[in-house]
Length: 280
Ligand SMILES: Cc1cc2nc3c(=O)[nH]c(=O)nc-3n(C[C@H](O)[C@H](O)[C@H](O)COP(=O)(O)O)c2cc1C
Image (cartoon, rainbow, N blue to C red):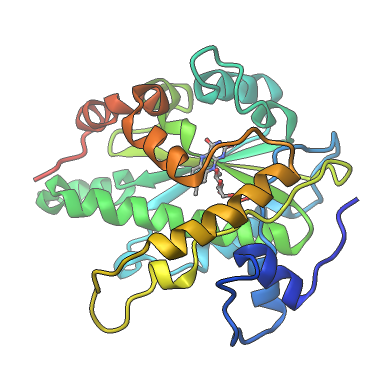
């Protein structure tokens, strides 16, 4: 069973006891955020009535570039379709990310310029701005912010979530499976379900704030001491879950050098080109 952690324990779980920030202002919302952990084991239990409306209301409450609202979400709850999504986002053999099939729903967050493109074309105008990289980025950012608000809302009502970036591995096939229009693509998935509390989930520690925060200007700093301290916290976290030894730096290096890690996402640019996005 998961035990409820309180302020000091939550901060310690996030940072370890060496580089622990001291002056965190506390309230229920911040406690909820600091308690985040991705959930990869779900109960076979239906989602509560109103779950989708609630998560979407939270998602639509996120800020959106110029109020253009260039995102959509496809809620996949049909088991057969969910298995097909899993096959596309399940790695080389389609057997990874099994929680997509296990959980009752996956939300697929779509960067969606199509609506506004049509609104513009239907008025006889040329949506030339949509040919630029920044339009793609705005829509992708909007979709990600919406997804994160939905995730936070889900966690606040006791549901668990895990993002699925692997939804971009076969971006072209996934877009076809979901009948997405041109000028849209799935940025990421978000699995939603009731966490299986019998399976231990620990808070995954993050880098010390000294590594990621710069005051007023980006400062070149010697990060090694702080990163070495983080390696210790990271090691304890992995050992706590019985995971085999791998340093954080090794994980970073693995993901920076392995095409296996890309797993199809190297095709993303050409898929986006085909789907109408421009990169001027
Ligand atoms: C954009 C994005 C894509 C992700 N894709 C996957 C994924 O495909 N499969 C998975 O198991 N976890 C995925 N994750 C979850 C990360 O692995 C997880 O957030 C990270 O390891 C930190 O752990 P935590 O969320 O428990 O704090 C993704 C997270 C993000 C933000």
